[in-house]
Each structure stands twice: as structure tokens, then as C-alpha cells.
Image (cartoon, rainbow, N blue to C red; front, side, top):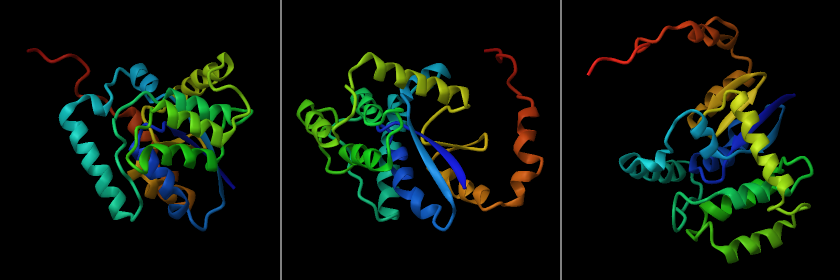
Length: 215
């Protein structure tokens, strides 16, 4: 059985689409998934990146693209009332729902659909309170223990090479993005390409921009 670690943040529409698509894409394979919430903003900050929604033209394209993807896959997706928003309450609630800080699929589905179905305000205090009542976490989401676990999850993701979400890590190999799902499927199916030199050869490829170009 393959063990997959799925790094996610509920603020990401691509993570939502990947979450909903994963069972269909991997149908027929023997695998288990560990869902690990991380703070996407912390991952991006570590790598010196801006969030895609911080770039106006990219933001507009992203929102069009995810809605198109959703209708292509016949799955519900409505933009929340405001985006991006602060995902910390949702991430902490997910972590608080499990003793190890690793929420199950039901919890993740509830949180993703809170954001990406219905078009409501994902950060609304009343809705968040109702969500907590529904999930009945075993720990206090605002506790220092839960906050530290989220920091630890994010640091572990960075150490594993994660630079964005959704990311899937299996046997030390990282697959990033919803469009990498077919590649993940091929790897789990035992496609011979993954045993060849191409996977590791890219690490040796020199950059043509090693020094800053003159103005």
C-alpha cells in the first residue's frame, strides 16, 4: 500500500479541487492518505514568493480557471464572499479535530466545502462557531498546542520540499498541483519513467540566470 501525504490549505481552490478529485484519479489503487494542514502563506514566505491572489491579473485568471476546472469535472465550486481570507481558524480547527493533528477525510471535506460551496463568507465568526460545533474538536483550536502543531506541520512541509499546495509526497517524491494528479497516478501505477534518470537529473541542470543580469 502506498502512503501519500497530502499537504493542503483550505484557502486554496486548487487544493479543494485536488481533494475532491483524488479518489476518482486513484481509483483501483491500494493507498492511504495522510492529510496535513499547512499555512500556505508561511510556505510562500519561506520561499520568498507572493501569493497568486496578491497579483491582480493572476488573481482574476486563477478565479476564472478554478471555476472552469470545476465545471469540467462536474463538481460544485462557488467563490466565497471574499478571497483570499485568513485561513488560520480553519487550519487550527482541522488540527484540533485529531490527537495527532492529522484530520481525517470527513473533517477536511467539511472544511473545504465550508469555503468552496455556497458562496458564503468563509471567515464569518457565526459560521466558524457553527462549524466548530459541528466538528466537535477534541482540543481547543486556539490553544498554544494546536498553534504549535500548525507551525510544525508547515515546517515539516518545507523540509519535504513543499513550495505550494496542493502537494503530494510519496516515497520521497513530491507532486505539486491539481494538474500533477495524472503524474501521481502514473507513479503509483509503476510507470517505468520514474525509475529512469530524468527525475533526479533535473537537480544537476545549471541555471542560466546564476547572476543578476545588468540593467
